[in-house]
Figure 1 (cartoon, rainbow, N blue to C red):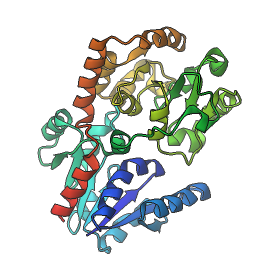
Figure 2: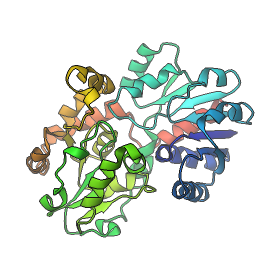
Figure 3: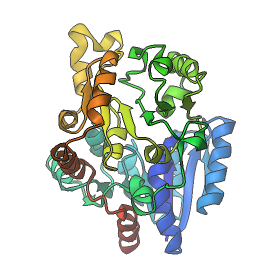
Length: 357
């Protein structure tokens, strides 16, 4: 069996990697298709991943080349991390599957299934039921969330703050904001100094580090990174999972990272304050609401909410003395929105592909 993974953006790879591992162990051929709009650093990273995980590499110039390439390939399955606009045409000759690259509270989690694939792998009965209702003609397979399998099954126990040049005797904060709507510009420029009692690992969204439109994000984060207690993840450190392991508390906004960190039974500070474009404010506030799904309401019951940057200190104090009842409530919500967390989601996906080639 030959399975192709469409890597529209490099940050899709952490979701794909556990499935690739399972497929190669089943003696399946795996090819990852990358696009050459990425710069040389990211191309080099893709080549390293190819050697580490044992998959073949194929490069396309741009996404408009994908349909013709896949139609003429020997693929048994083609896996996408986001909607593929020409999926209807591709489905006529090939089997396609969607592994959405995140499980955050954005509306796009559900909207991407308007482009119907042969199958979509989803996280839990709750989200499957919603998708079945929204898209009755879809084929939704409840498998769980593959990205977390490595840490759920094996852990990253050897990683400590000192691996990132930080102090092993300090608690570690992981700040993992999304690119939009983001809280970065609402943070103090003195963030590092005002939280000097903590290690701070900053793992921004890939776009915050690579897109020119987010240069202000880059400038702010580079300023923080000058402090000894701060580690800023580089653009080729695309996998959040190792940072989830080493951190004690997560700070995040409208990101999948919240579900991922909570799945490890660790406290999350929800930064419920955002820098919005003028086109998302005032009379256009409905656009902001439309961008976020109602699932964000669950954040209130599983996170410590900071309504502004200046609330973070107080919420950190609350997070240090978590009540057992709150922890149980968080675990229930995570199971509802992330599905089965037994560490074998990638195995279920691989076996489905093999059994339905």
